[in-house]
Length: 306
Image (cartoon, rainbow, N blue to C red; front, side, top):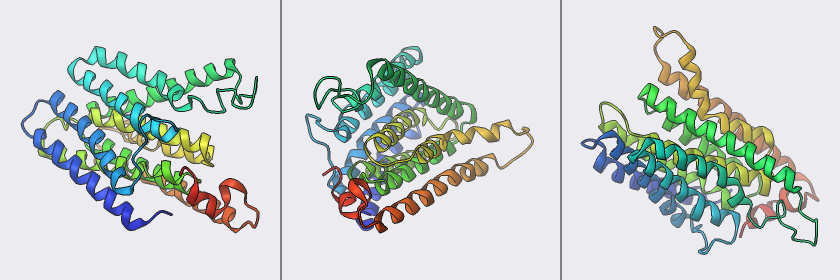
């Protein structure tokens, strides 16, 4: 794993920056303004954490990690700022971002481009468009579900659940062979945590819907590149992506039952722990093989994405 002390510093810097920025407007601003500021806090704090890690993207973006940080992440932030000003226009912007996230991340890759000669791409054009459409629907459903949950419950727990999923995704992707890309999950989780803490200054609507939208796009993109460009398994990707959505389950309980916030956190923690255990076991098994190949070896893991 990369230096845990350095990752801790990056987490602290990103969390502190997001906390300060969001807190300045949290207490006395209307909910739409607080939501827009929370978006800016997340999108500003995450790159600050990457700077501490020494993992700032290249501009113009040339690799999938660069496109995640430079294009996809800010685009999600723009969509959420639009949503804070105009909910109807915001949903249009969110749909556009959901539809374009996968094509942007896979641009120029062997999945969709003939890098080794004619007809050498891994996905046929028909399959490519089918995958694009399916993943866009998956992202949009998760985006809408988290937004609705935050509005329905008026709690901070959806942000905590998403933060835990992002942190777990970062660690699992690192264990899956993508040290550079996986580290994005550290400052993303920290930024979401900082915004959640700042929202405690509000007594009514916490104003975290925008931060949730940016966070779920970041989580989706991180898991997608881990699955397609590293050795992230389908099981771990699914576990981590559904983690924040499990916060909906307590809503099925009778209204008289209390402790829903705690139950949400417990439900979100279980799949993250399971995914981490599975990834650690796979990493240890691959590292123990004398001829573990380009992904399984420790040297390849340390150099992947550099």
